[in-house]
Length: 76
Image (cartoon, rainbow, N blue to C red; front, side, top):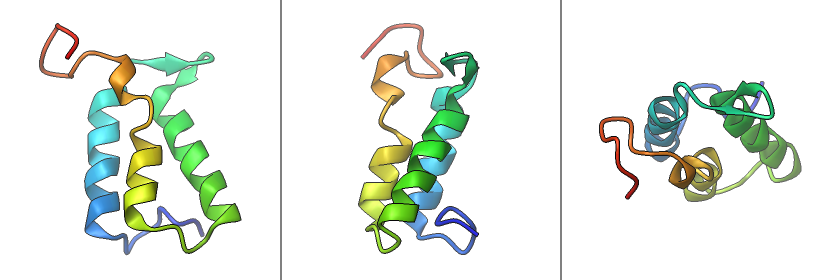
């Protein structure tokens, strides 16, 4: 079991939902971008099982600024 399994803190749940939308259609090193975000978060959880929800959310969304908003074709 990982830190992303339910029950999750609402902040983490929201970040995971946002990551799904932002990462959709993007890849990192040939793999889906969401897989990268989840993998990095799981590794953090292995090393810091009591990581605060805000840190988990930040890790899930760390690549989001690299892509346009899912509902807008321009970068912000």
